[in-house]
Structures are given as C-alpha cells and as structure tokens.
Length: 148
Ligand SMILES: CC(C)(COP(=O)(O)OP(=O)(O)OC[C@H]1O[C@@H](n2cnc3c(N)ncnc32)[C@H](O)[C@@H]1OP(=O)(O)O)[C@@H](O)C(=O)NCCC(=O)NCCS
Image 1: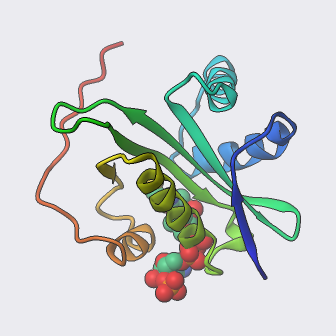
Image 2 (image 1 turned 120 degrees about the vertical axis):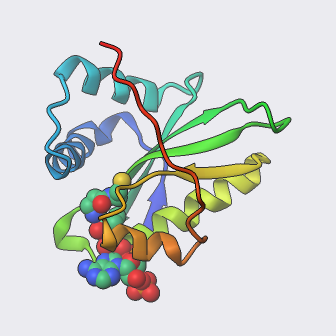
C-alpha cells in the first residue's frame, strides 16, 4: 500500500482528532478540549510556527506529526522541533512512521532549517528503533519544570 504524506486541511479535523485522541491515550494524557482546538487552529494557520503532516493510506488518515519551527541562537534560519508523532495501531509496521519522518526531513531541508530534533521516552523501544535508523541518540538529557 502506498502512503501519501501531506499538509492538513480543514476537512481533516475529525480524522485528525481521532489520531490525536489515540496519541493522548498512548501517553495517558488528558488534553483539554480548548487546547486541542487551539492546536488544530494553529496547524491550519500559515502564520503559526506550529505545523502538521498527515499520512494517508488508501484515502484514510493513518498517521500524523505535529512540529514547531522556531528560531535558534546557533543558526540563521531556525530549527524544527518534532513534538508529536503517531500512527494508528492498525497501520503500524507498514512504513507510515518512516514515510512521515522522510517527508519531514525533506521539508526541513527545503526550508533551509539547520536542525530537526525530537524527544521520546528512553523506554519507547519501538519508536527508538525507527529514530535510530535516522541518527544516533546524543548525550543530552532533558530538564522540565511544570509551571502551572
Ligand atoms: C513509533 C511509531 C510512530 C512508528 O510508526 P510505524 O508506522 O509503525 O513505523 P514504520 O512502520 O515506519 O517502522 C519504521 C521502523 O520502526 C521499527 N518498528 C516499527 N514498529 C516496530 C515494531 N512493532 N517492532 C519492531 N520494530 C518496529 C522498525 O525498525 C521499522 O524499520 P523498517 O522500516 O526497516 O521496517 C508508532 O509505533 C506509534 O505511533 N507509536 C505510538 C506513539 C509513539 O510512540 N510515538 C513516538 C513517540 S513521541
């Protein structure tokens, strides 16, 4: 089956929300509706640094990535943070995740951004197998303060 990766459109909202809900479940996260709605609005807003990619297989949305482009102090053109990556469980293992990442890498290169980076849990062996095939993990650790 061939996978098409493309930018989201307004008509994708319901299908995207299903993927987003699955992703939230994966992380046992309870994202408030106002945040979900705000995220989707930003995905569709060309002026927002948030952007998304959707993967379609046989006309059905089966995967998504959400990213943030931001400036960086170590580059002239900015960098890209891959915040979320999710593939419908029924479509996993068929190259959808790789197709999304390949598309994202090509997009970042086309924009002239200097870095693409992301995090995942060190226990997420499945995702890490995919990620390890792109680049070796580096030696940074993450510090995070919840402020509200
Ligand atoms: C991680 C995830 C996005 C991978 O998506 P996918 O469509 O199944 O990945 P692919 O089919 O493109 O697999 C790519 C590679 O990952 C590895 N992989 C994927 N699923 C695997 C599995 N169940 N067992 C072993 N390796 C696996 C393989 O190395 C595979 O390599 P290949 O292309 O040489 O076969 C998907 O499993 C997912 O959504 N998981 C839940 C959410 C998550 O963990 N997101 C990432 C963290 S933020």
